[in-house]
Length: 438
Length: 149
Image (tube, rainbow over all chains, first blue to last red; front, side, top):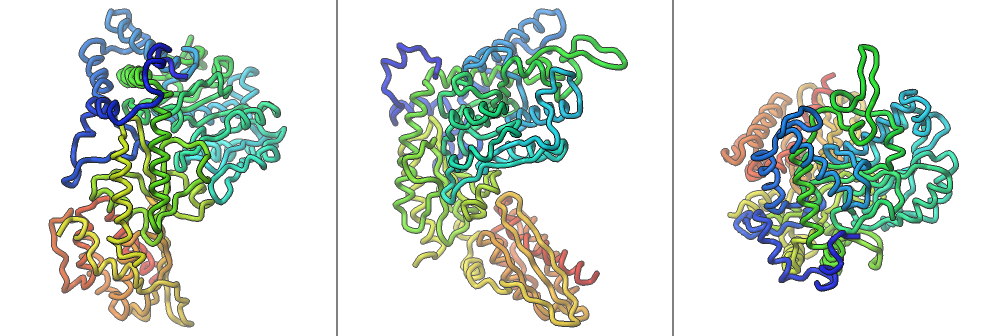
């Protein structure tokens, strides 16, 4: 749940509205610019969010006042920089319901997922001693993912399977893109060592049934890895309530800067895992032959860290908490409904994804019959509407839906109902422009 | 004309529908042929293009693929132009087309050399779409090499 104070939650409307959002938009200067001579309508937050000025000012503030290497050096700046850096960790950990030592900084969610798979790979190669045996994979073991996954939560597991001889299996989707939960219980077996799955599909915006999947994994003693890239920015997320073992998330999709993301892991697990990247700042003692490693999080943070980015991400988190994650989620649900309903009513437009009623964030994937998504996106851009086109790094899911690519509009807290209406108006004109459907 | 209208000239939209050369054609006995598969990793679009060579003359260009109007129209224009011309002549056109695509809107297409391909001049103002226009030409270049092999 959001950690915004209960009193704030009680006195404010349940969700944002256009008036409040208009005030928030003043914090995002980029939203005031024009493209192609028309005002920008930014509906590509699923790819990356825009940032409020306080976030990049926080980076500047850090460089103007505290810049120094952290966790080394005894001078005042080094101490203050370390405090800023670790306070950021505390703030971001609190935001997702984790303890301080359970959040590792990474460059992005992709690196977080690779950290897990390479660490497990190292354990499989015998590194990390007895404690790491629990993460070792080999022939006869299974890794299970889903057909919904972004390539970042698929390819690292493919590679790990290839390195270790473990088998990679997946829970398929039906033709609408809904996860085949009826098959999940058969696909997850006692041989399953890891279940990795997304919290929210980056293409469809649908929310997966985390409790059901976690229960299936627990039954067979498998570790659970959640891809939180599309959930942490948009929904209240509490890793302890979700009861997952690991969760990757991305800073730049949640108002933070690029170059930083995070990995949550249960403390007991992280401390037993062999490191991925090795080098300075992650050791207790080093000889010419070998090294001993610190516990998490520093065990996984070799080299000079992303200090200003961590500070800026904490600032982003504080901004989100002040608005309230519950209220953001409720607003985006309304915007999402407006998009899905509106798009579905436009002749020749097919909205992808399960039938209405499935839990979804403010994300609307669609195809315009007879017009390629690339051309759709180009036309929308001429109207100032920024959306994502392509396979959205989810080729297998697109294949399962029977398309090569799609157009995806995705919202965030700074979008208004007028943004949605400008999208709908522009999409209505696409087929006419390309001479299709006459 | 707006940038968008320059990008989507009628001639391009027409070719995107007509799709000359669409449908792979088997080379007859004794005719050399080469093939190439190209992907646009951004959108997952792809084209498989086959060229039949009789001596140094391009006898037939055929292809199958899935893509945006720019990539489909480009493949159509290429197929129509290449048929019956000398290999070296085709390479001159290809170089001219590539230069046009790299021009970021600074060149007008030379209709003398490019024929319908000159209509793609507007594409060069959209760097994200140049790859779409080049997809079939890159495939043709590789297919010619394969046919010579």
